[in-house]
Length: 120
Image 1 (spheres, rainbow, N blue to C red):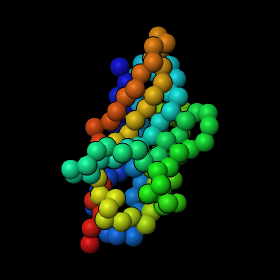
Image 2 (spheres, rainbow, N blue to C red):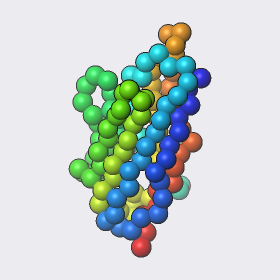
Image 3 (cartoon, rainbow, N blue to C red):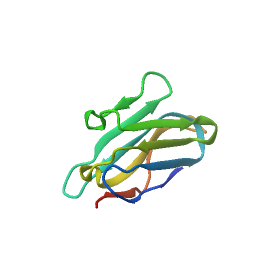
């Protein structure tokens, strides 16, 4: 089993910054991709940013250069630096990881989510 633990959410004023962190633990052989999704009240969950082992990082159009995703592979961690936050960025942010268990089977895991509220 793989467990993802997010941290770093909170209340911030418009134009402010937050840094989200997510740590993966468990019977992990290899993580192939880590990313962030978000879900606002009354809306579907949407992809924010993804960082695969191979290929380029993906950012949703609404990010528009404001967020940066990074990884620490040695620690099985992914980060999301969010700058110039807007009220419409208010949502629960979820960490996602894809990879292989120690026995080789593939996995897709989700964190519990961390609340980000952008308000004055």
